Image (cartoon, rainbow, N blue to C red; front, side, top):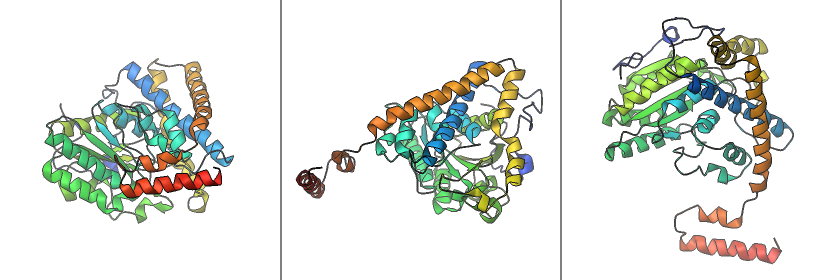
Length: 366
C-alpha cells in the first residue's frame, strides 16, 4: 500500500497538520482528494452513524424516565467510530472503551447487546460467534494492553491480523497507554492505538490533562508514527485509519491515531456539562459536528435525497425502540449466571458457594 499519511518516525506536533477532507459545511476542500469508499459503503457508513445517534437519543430519554441505567453516549463521535470499523477486516480485533457504540454496531455487535449491557445485564457482553469485539472495558486504558496482547498472539501465530483499540484523551495519562504502545513498538506487533480526543476528560479540559501540545506527538516517546485527523470528517477519518491498519498489517509495527473531535453533551448520563463549560463554547465547536458535513457531501454526489435521509432516521429510531422492548424480556439474571462465567471450570469453593446460594434462596422462597 502507498502510505500518504503514515510515515516512519513522523509525528504531528500541531493541530494545523490534521488531515481533513471536508470543510465546516461539508464541501471537499481539495477537489482532487476524495474518498476510496464506494457509494454503497458511504451510505452504509452513514446508516450506522444514524443508528448509533438514534440509539443514544432514545437511551437518553429512557434514562431520564428511569427505564435505563447510567450510560456513556457517543454524541458527536459517530464518524470516527464508524470509519474505524470500516477499516478493519473480519479477522481483525477491536478492544473497545465504554464510548465505542458506533464502532461495535458497525462491526456486528447487535443493538440488543448494548441495551442489555447498559441496563445491567452482562449477557450483553456476549458477542455473536465470528464478531471479534471484546466486551466493553471500563478501567481506563487497560483495553490498550488487551489489544497489544492480541497483536502479540497474531504475530506469534504468523497471522496478518490487526488489533485496534481506543481510549479518550483523559486515558492518555494512564500508564497502560504508554506501556502497551511501548512493548508493541519494541516487537513490532500489529496494533493500532487510537484516541478520541473529544477535548474533555469528564470535566477536565484537554489543556489541563496533557503537557504535550498534541496527543499524536506522544508516539515519539515509543518510536512509532503519530497522526492527527479530523474525527468529525468521515472521509478523512477513514483514509487515515485505513492506512494505519494496513501499516500495522504489513509488519511495520503500531501506529497512534488521534481523532480530534468534540464531546457533544454529557460524559455519562449522570453528568451536567453546564457546570464546567458554556453553551456558547458548545455551539462553536458543534459547527464542525459530523452529520451535516457528510450529508452535504452525499447530497452533492447525488447519493441520497432529503426524503431518504428522513427515512433512515425514522427507521433507525423505530429499530431502537423495538429492540429495547425485546431486551426487557432478557433483563432478569439467573443465579447460575453469577457463578458459571467466572471460570471455564468452577473451583470447589465456588461450587460450594453456588450451592449455598441456591439453598438460601430456596429456603426464602425466591
